[in-house]
Image 1 (spheres, helix red, strand yellow):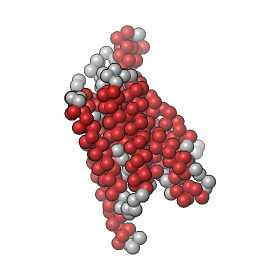
Image 2: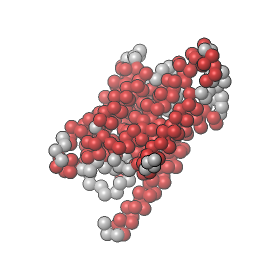
Image 3: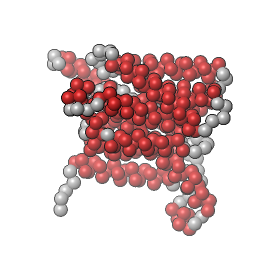
Image 4: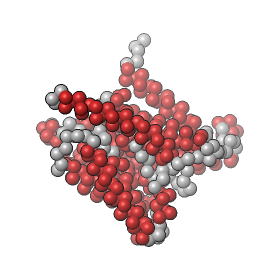
Length: 331
């Protein structure tokens, strides 16, 4: 009998954990009658709640978490910086600006129009920021995300000023809180499936561009085309998730770092594990958010911010210590 390798054991553990948390999410809620037994009996109320509320919510958690995890990994590969993500490069802030402008230009609009506006502004902002950092020569890895947060802060300030001017601050405050308990549907989050499939198909090319432009071109890769494709995918994921569930901080930042710590830097081999890892993290945070004030619930963005902030500080300190050790060694 052939034993499991270390990678296979980690894959098995994350799949089992993902399956358990998915089942918990599906059958957790204020309505106690939604149980597997009630579904098998054909209880109409239980079936209705399960199909119209529990399943869409759980799928939204999985798709948004997987999408932001992949977007963060691609951003880190393109920038060659482990502290980059859609939330530290202005992508999400620009998506919020696009969403606001869609409301100002069109009083009544569909989710696809909102997503189109959010995507357009997110893509422009991400391309602009990438162009800026490519012209800078900074050795310290923490400077780029700090610059990105300043850049995002400027976009956010403009969004706030416009919302205040046109008296829609309350609406923007709702959209700026990530939650899976919003009234309505999560249709737009399913758009994330497109970049997720592309991420799996082009995982090898994204791994190569993470090694640098010269190395990629020496291997015959169309570097600029792959980078542009990556930026489009990042913007699309950021826009779709923001419109559907709001911002989920730290997911695109810490999950790629945690996943690569467990599974290595081979994207082709571990891309699916990255998606599962992100889904497990957000599922845990969502379950905690629903248990703290049960039968009510906190916004999941608050729970993610606390857990993600702690994990990010750990990686930040390790990164600074690593950079300090390299300088002492004369690297």
